[in-house]
Length: 519
Image 1 (cartoon, rainbow, N blue to C red):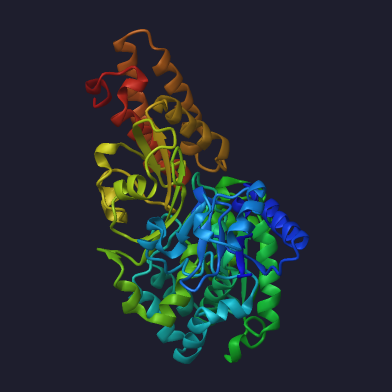
Image 2: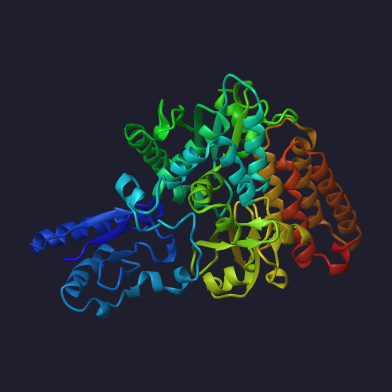
């Protein structure tokens, strides 16, 4: 009997992976079949979950999406001709969705067991840490700078500048903070990585720690991710016992350790300074800058704050070299990005590609269009504060600067797809309502402006004539400008993106003629 692989990813489990596992074990026992079933990370081909993979001389063969009821027939097929099974997918690596990806961050996804240190090391794990120790702090910081890596949390700030700033700042104590408060709609890459490849994040943070002179780190995880929290905590103990954390990280002679902290569900704590307040045991409220966290961050000490995908990119950069990383991407957007397809999409899942593919390729070629089969209306890119991009702009390359040029952003790479039944006026109102609900309340534009925004949209939709609608459109646009340029952080500053894009591209949903929306 060949070895079988089934994901333990929380989404796979939510759609029945544990039930499939139980059925496999039970049926094999009843048939007196020797069974080796390994629970691995997920490939991220979520429309095929639960996806079972089976060893073969040619590679792993896939079956999915499976249910527990499919198991007896599957076991029959495995003892005969596997390809004859109706859910047989052929070689998983040859599936078009996966074969055309460029997986750097998620190279181990679906292959390794999350808490197996042997699996991680067998697939290149800790090579980056070993290289960083050999290079020393200055050259490691230079490697990160030369790679062109930019923050994957949304702001896209050059990571190497942060590393050099923290490294050059004198202090008795420095910190590494991983922002794993992944709260944007349609995003799940952080969760996938923390649940499926936790040692990669640990390695990235350890490299950061010994490079900038920090001796302690925190992974701030949203409370809605209990499986990620449990996996990370178990992985930290394993890494510590193996000498990758503690007083002598990887034999470097330098100390670095870390722990997991769980947030309480506030969206604003995804903003780095509000997150720091939360870590300090305070209410999460945005801090004014300067001083920046790199100079005065957690507990007033120099702090390197990155999100999961940024820190997880570092081991590969060190192991393969800066130039290897720079060979992916376009312009100033270098490396790869794990784009996440969600919403009304036929083939939802994770697509890791170099920057530069178009939104149309992502939504239509990978995603297969809408799940409903109805025409595409728009895709919201970059979370609940991202712009609604109409199909006429789907040929825009997925690149930070290209998206900024059309009044949009990539953010954390989440793409939520909608068909022609979605009411964009309702979504614009929801954006203002969301901002009002999640505002920390520190600055007036966000605290008051978002509430006024809901009221203005309500008046716009209720206006009895064109004159009344025109007046409300002028007020709404003025309010969006105030929010964008007057807010202390991106929550208020970016709520104008979904509102303004909905108003511009879908005026009919507001009862407007195109000329009225463009005033």
